[in-house]
Image (tube, rainbow, N blue to C red; front, side):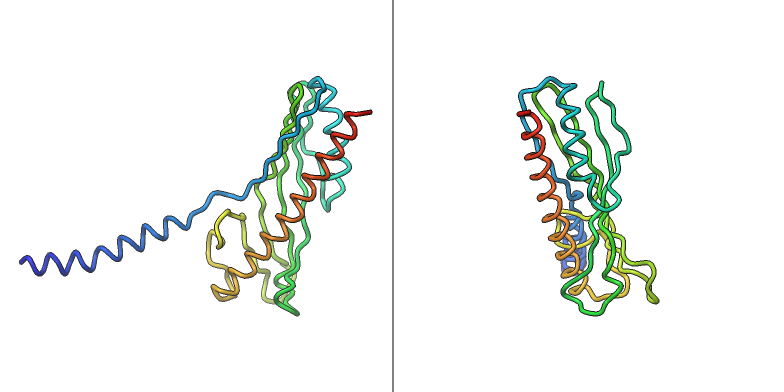
Length: 186
């Protein structure tokens, strides 16, 4: 009886551990935040932030403001990054877009920019359909397996998508910061 219990426990324990390890793979969504302190009142800072939006995120493909509320100090918008894998040659399926949401919140002396909901959508116009990675997470793999490619190739493409998105978003945040500070001095 004792040996049977040990055998059952020996078989059940690795399965339970595998479930826990798989649960650890669930990562929070990728989000970038930058706070800029500028010595302006809330309304003036909102106007300067809207101008900085126009010259940074607004110039991106499909960059548009969804909502702007001067009294609440909120600017919301969408933009995207066009993507094509450099690691896989001649694969139209890797082409696509990484769409993201931008929320700018201004208060007296402070402007916070948050870029979130980075979502990759593959090229739907290909014969085999696009490679869709979905919502980008902080982890090293997509939320679900990518249809049409192997696991290792999927991880490499996922890492490349995240690197392209991060480089572009961080560059835009830096440009937004610089434009906002330059506008504040005028």
